[in-house]
Image (cartoon, rainbow, N blue to C red; front, top):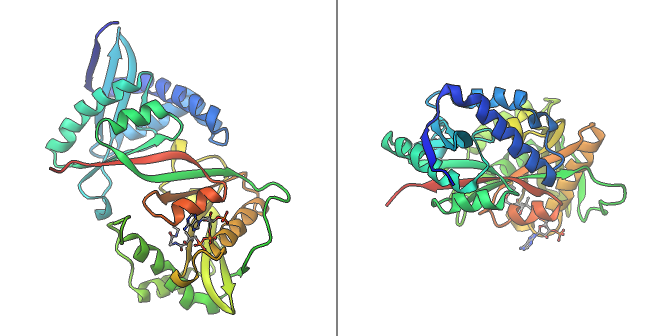
Length: 322
Ligand SMILES: CC(C)(COP(=O)(O)OP(=O)(O)OC[C@H]1O[C@@H](n2cnc3c(N)ncnc32)[C@H](O)[C@@H]1OP(=O)(O)O)[C@@H](O)C(=O)NCCC(=O)NCCS
């Protein structure tokens, strides 16, 4: 076998990288047919590889064997302080015909990332490509997050909810604000240790008061023994910047938020709320439903797969420390 050559990514590499990405997506759709067929075409992947290559401070690497490109890697930083001094490889930021080459690509790319002080690395990778995931694990990454995808519910699939579900009303705003704070309060604790601080309750109240009538978002509440104990929000997936390009199935509905007050968890409210969003997505004309969760969140990482969401992309993370 000829020698693997790895060098920094250059603009001329975009067309061949787009071809590799379209191949990756074709393999991915064999496992996840609900993903968009659009990115099976190199003309569509060229657009998103170009955007990844031209993002501010983007850089990466490209690998060749016998003159043919066998892999590429492109990252760029996000500005939010939640992610630290970081580099992100988004859904269009990597593909390889030889998974092992990804370790070499990372070695070249990360040399510069770390030299520039960007030590928190995030990679969105297809969930079904076990060899690629293993290659990432063997350069020090672990799974932080999952994107989940499922078809619309089949007739008769959803059972009678164990708690009462209804659309939210303005009078629910105080408890909706409380529930919104509940999620980050849960996730700053062990074993998630999220760096995103919970908003002040006043801030959440003001946002709910201002946004309550926004027709882009549909909010449900769950009631148990006469009190609201949980909420969930459905919207079009386009509202979420975390699900873009190859990770944005066409015309998908999005379970964008759900929380149940701590004393009422495990009663079936989470399932009932999630299923209300699934039914809403079908009625609103969406063709599938997406959500995402921290895999270190012991509650959501059990609840959403139990509702039929299958992992489509994994977000892997490595923090270069000591
Ligand atoms: C995630 C959350 C909304 C789920 O709501 P819930 O009312 O606790 O969940 P449910 O009682 O409806 O359980 C849903 C499913 O999760 C699974 N589950 C719940 N608790 C579980 C446990 N301790 N062990 C294993 N599985 C469990 C069950 O399989 C259940 O499915 P089933 O109906 O087939 O039995 C809720 O726990 C919560 O608010 N967590 C904190 C905030 C959060 O994580 N929000 C989601 C962010 S993505």
